[in-house]
Image (cartoon, rainbow, N blue to C red):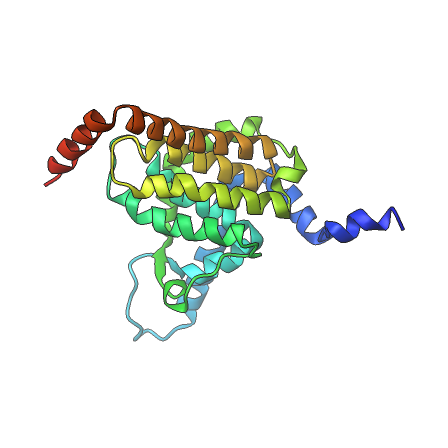
Length: 245
């Protein structure tokens, strides 16, 4: 009876654990490229089956809902990583503020314990060009592969179901920071979110902790500066916002 209690408290899906082990060995870049190749093959097969009168489409595309379904439970980490990457370049605004809202929604759903991301049907039905996903992979590949070389499954409690819920709740803080269109509010928090997402994908609890420390630490430091240099800091922000218009 004593041996059965931990299993009841922490149910494990063997198929899920096997899939995560495969994902950790393959790496996120290879996972994305394989998914894009499958989606493109499906798109071309569907186009070939259509009549010649069908309206031509310039490039292979797929519905967002299909991509989410292909990723299954991995969609939280994968989508979080894709949304965080545009936030990492310095002095880039507007786009990070746009992607921060779905990042915030994903973090909230993780905290609520959802098994897979949920989006309204109108969002799921949006068709996205696969070429754009390829550009994201091309841009980020060397950085992600470098991180993958040192990432490995460890600290399983951090990436387990309860750990992922805690991580989701904490990720809402840097996601909110990215939403604020002020200097220094998106690059470092975006990097923190990306590292955390990669840790969730690779089942690397150390990466999850490191990403959260980066994101939360930067937000805390930003708030400390704002508090101790209140008037000067507010003036700087006001001048910067005024310069946008």
